[in-house]
Length: 242
Image (cartoon, rainbow, N blue to C red; front, side, top):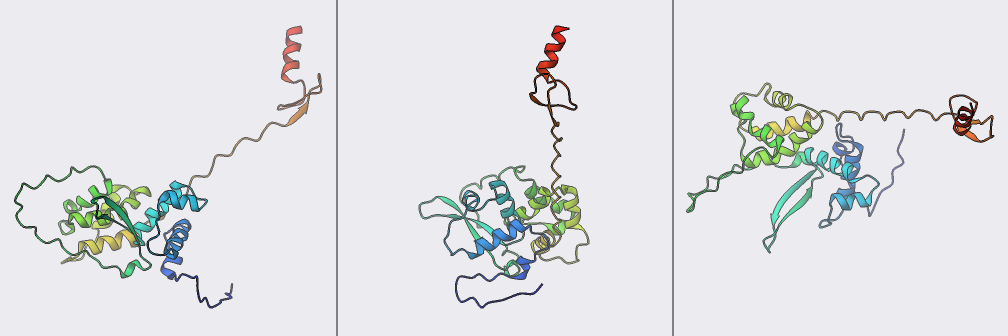
């Protein structure tokens, strides 16, 4: 193979080989990332809008978006609008390796004047529960609530690809360095670099071949059957006459 290259002066998008040749992202995810990175700032994107733009359905689009989020190319931020409503803003990163890690430690909040509300019960997100429980297996992997929220999409992709929670925990807690200072950075690296490929789709079941066509010996009507002879009506008439 060889390339014929032309110099583009307008209407082009620069894409790094870390995305174009990504070892674990599917072709759908890479193509979707290329399209999203080519859009101007402020353009609305959603699963429905993307599914309406391309031939892939909403399930395939949603799976590709989760892959990109797990690999760091997409980030979803919840923001409060001036009118008080909460919205989710999607941020596209053309080079996830350049992102800042880990997030700044949360400062100690001042003593509240009113009682602090109880934390929300666990159990809604298996990936978040898995990450929150890592400290039971390795005390050095104590994560803040914000770090758990940031890493949950990455761990969720492992679970979606059929990796058991126990195997994910073993992978994340294996051979930890001594004096670990940034559990967030270590876990994010292991979740991205060690992401296993998706299981191949099971082949579709082959449909049985239709029976061959024959001409009825009694009425010359075509019928399908394993062997030549009489059609069903003629067989029934012959049986009744007998």
